[in-house]
Length: 147
Ligand SMILES: [Zn+2]
Image 1 (cartoon, rainbow, N blue to C red):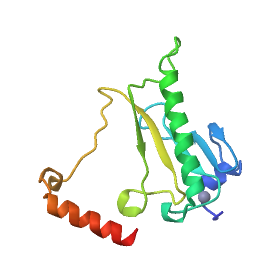
Image 2: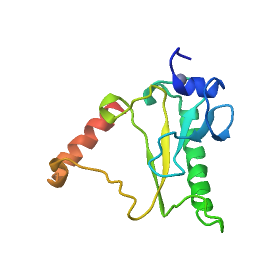
Image 3: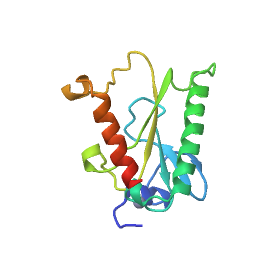
């Protein structure tokens, strides 16, 4: 655990959070700045700054818990006393500063989406220039080389 890691403080009970789930490896608690109500963060219990440092077992458990969170968010949207509005679910994990990571403890965002919620992904103009089959295959080859 690092001194100023807010997620480690939450996991140690030194900072407030609303937990949804916790086991030995993974915890899930509400994001304090939700994209939409029902936004949950899934984190490894052991402090791990980057995805590349996360052991695969914890990574698998994170995804397993995230699937359950998504199912719970969808389920609450069907309750008579409407829980959260949910027509779809996004998973988002920022690994590294360039990817938008701001808290240096791995976390997977799980949040409900619905038509007209006002959130969008923006792509650079490069996205709309189609890649050639050759470019795509060359990139795949490079990835296979370092696998
Ligand atoms: Zn931490």
